[in-house]
Picture (spheres, rainbow, N blue to C red):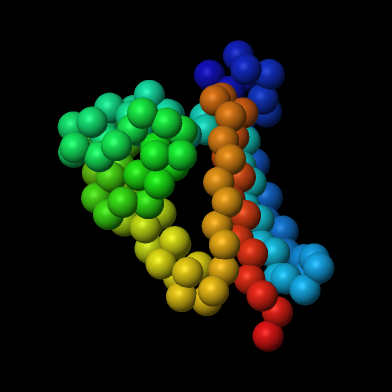
Length: 115
């Protein structure tokens, strides 16, 4: 599947940390399938969560128990990871940005004020 998309057979995850205008910035980038927004919308609707805009679906990504995984495995499928990440970022007075492109990957960017 990856080779059909012009990607290397082995996936890539990139971690970055830097100082930028008085903030500590941490980024996690991957070249995976991206966030399946149609699946997010379907899960939102099945749980009664708003999903008519991209911002509503982005917010729902962080709702406890919302997962697009088809099955629970030892590493995915419980819908707690993104919510836990958001809670920690907020606890540290940070900001969390998410961007994703279908079949191209996802980027998480966390910004924290320098102490």
